Length: 190
Image 1: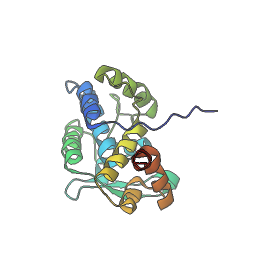
Image 2: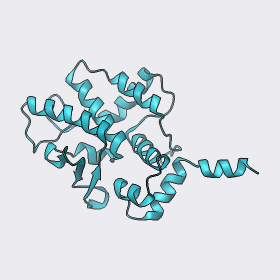
Image 3: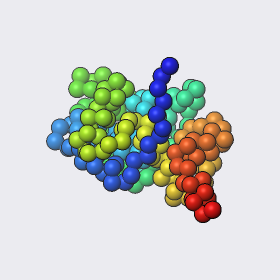
Image 4: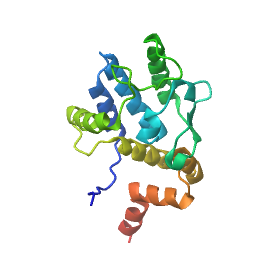
C-alpha cells in the first residue's frame, strides 16, 4: 500500500526560494524555473504540463489548451501575468534552440520530453537548496495554486474548471483538505 502524506501548501516566500534555487545560468535551470512557475500559476497536473507544446499556449489571451487531461478530457486554463512573462521567456528560448511549435515545451538536453522521474528527484533537491523543510513535489504546486485562488476569493466553480475536476464536490473536498482554516477558526472561537 502506498503511503499517503497530507497536502502541504507552499507559502509565497517558499515558492520564491524554490525559484531562486533553480538558478538561471544554464538553459536547464531556466527550463526548470519556467516549469515550476507554470505549475504554480496554473495548477496543471505534471503530466499535463509535460505534454504542452508552444502551439497550446496563447500568450495574448493568457490561455493554455490542455489536450490530454485526466480521463482523456481536454480543457482550457488561464494563466496570470507572472506566469505569462516567465512562460513567454521560455518559449522564446525554446524557439531560439530551433525547436518547433509542435514539439514539447519542456525537453531534455537530447530533445526528448522531460519525464516525471526527473522531477521527482529534482524538486526535493531544489527544496533542500532553498531551505524548505516541507515535502516539495509537482502536485504540491497544484495544491498551492488552488489554495491561493481560494484565498483570493475566486469562485469554487472557476477553481473546478481551472483544476479540471469533474465534480464541484471534488473541488470542495480538495480545498477543504488543503486549507481547513474555516474549521480551525470556528473551533477556536468557541
